[in-house]
Length: 406
Picture 1: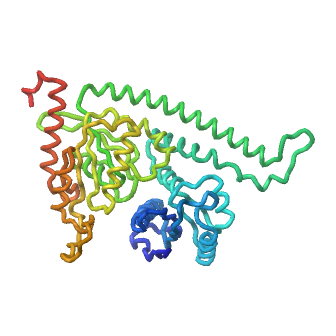
Picture 2: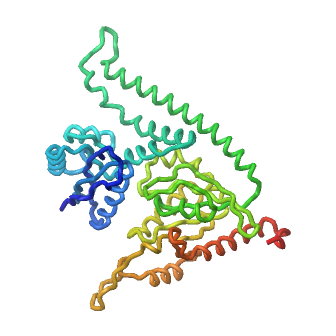
Picture 3: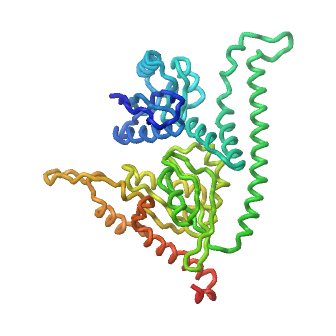
């Protein structure tokens, strides 16, 4: 299968320090379209850019399943290793989570640092966590990722056997010591999270019975920009993945009707299990919300798959039965190519105009939806009116005798 060499270079106004150079590696499963695999690598490249790593080439191989030993085939791994050696590549990034044995086997042949998708996402979270709560959650996920991968780190000591009566070599003792230290740290972090969870539960109970609205969606779809626009706050927003890790809650008032609006961490395909577990407490705002505003990047070629990922994650955290308002953002960036009249193949996302897409979603979805642009403020007033109506309806059901106030 052909490899794609990326000519992208760091922007002129970027950081002065040189970016690490990387190759991206993926396996295309049987039955999986190559185009979909390339779009997954586009997302992996965006993750790398978020971590200040510049992808310079892609390696793809079609296999029924990734090799249990070295992820790709032996010949392909030799080709990747030779190219990394010749080009003095800094990092090889694999688009799946590698098992501990795969990592060890690949590291024996690859002459550069090795990252898998999970490790890359964890590194981004570690660099972007700001509050003590987020840092504790990410550290817990990081240690749980590291624990099964400790074996092999002390192989240089395996030949240094102990004296009479010892059970094993120094390498074995070092591994067990490290495992014990990490288990103790995991236990300490879990206890710290329980204490913070109790504090946050008290904070949520002190907010009274205001209607709660939570912004959810795939990462980098514009949730924080929409939050700033609606709440007139200054939540950090950036065109990078996982710009927001901490849940931000703001009180918003529409026509004398107050409610709470929260912005949460974005979801992503193949979100590491460790992160889902450690961030479940952060997503209490989602579970306790009265209404979910699901923000979607309509300009993304795989937006429907992103919707499915978010819905699956909401099910996993126990919020799949919440009422949802579907917001298709970034209509200003939507592009399409008119289909040739002689082309009899079924229309694709790229051949559908925005109007056609609107009609198809409005017709087939029971979920209320709207198309807007948080950047250009297109259709924002209708969004505010719709949101006010939904919040008022929830409020009226909760306080039927206060309806005359609104």
